[in-house]
Image (cartoon, rainbow, N blue to C red; front, side, top):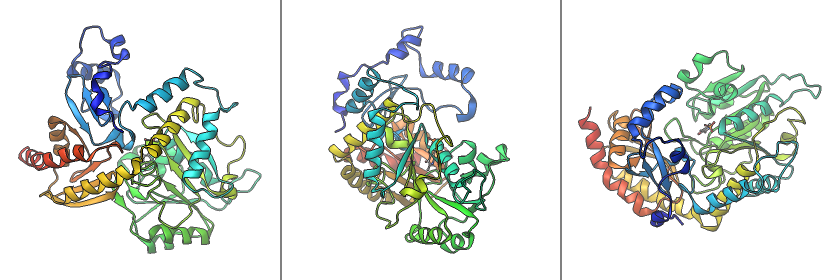
Length: 428
Ligand SMILES: *Cc1c(COP(=O)(O)O)cnc(C)c1O
């Protein structure tokens, strides 16, 4: 359960903050001045300087409290400073922290087995661990390049990879090639070649695009960065049929939707298909960085052979222990039931708010549209009122809170939303 009632038992300031502070207290504004002179500007100006968290709450450098309805963008599955995850990470670090991939460790093996079991992976399935979502997709991109390639190492006739308009798969060069948004891609061209983007959710366009030159199709079950847009019913089944017929891999990017986010372990659990590969990251480590590529079945799992891919940190004992702890806590505390319950409550409540024109998503991955282009102003009004939300588009708000969010906490946001919308519209 969430430990939001036990705040007094936590240290209010991190030892690291004390270590770097020269005065008794540094304000948020002072931290941001230092930020802007020392950190690269790719993220713009951060909205707040956060110093501690507990459950679904976080506090900034000026002592202001926020209900975190974004969860580090679908990362903090169990909220902040979850006592069990924290203690498992600390004791693993105090036992064995890093070993290199010349060696393995029990936590790495146990996590691979656990993920294959949770995803009902067929016999012969395998796992490759990474540190992030983009690296998991990078590994999947390399896997796709080996589909249809000859054993002597030369690549084959399958030169194309299909992704969807609106897709977001990450920021490194391979994952960026799969990502659709021009503003992200164009400044970095030439990107790894052969990626074709086809219209979102259009089965006829998919069937027309797939032939024997296609190595793989990459799909997000729900496009998160594009504003929480679910694939239409039947699309995944059609994609499975078309890829199987052409010998192309079907690769599902569940980096944002996986690990309980939708109330199920995988968003695609009930879709009635078996993919060739799945990528995971965000929620997997409960806030600790870790990603994974799961390859389904013997044939796909043997596409990358010894020496063809690697990583220094991926799958290290601490990250894999964090993920094991996260999965254990989700299971033993029946968190998925909470996700379904609070998700339904939020969606029903949001649909009843004036000015909300559409509500999308599943479980605790929610997108809702507004009747005016005021989403960034709603984010600002939310911060001032003590709520962290996100605007993936000019009229779209995204919520991806910790999976332990309570109905009462969700209710405080529903009650506050009409005033936030009014404040945002007044600011226009
Ligand atoms: C966030 C995200 C990624 C990239 O993950 P990083 O850990 O930021 O590299 C890839 N795919 C999807 C669907 C995502 O939401």
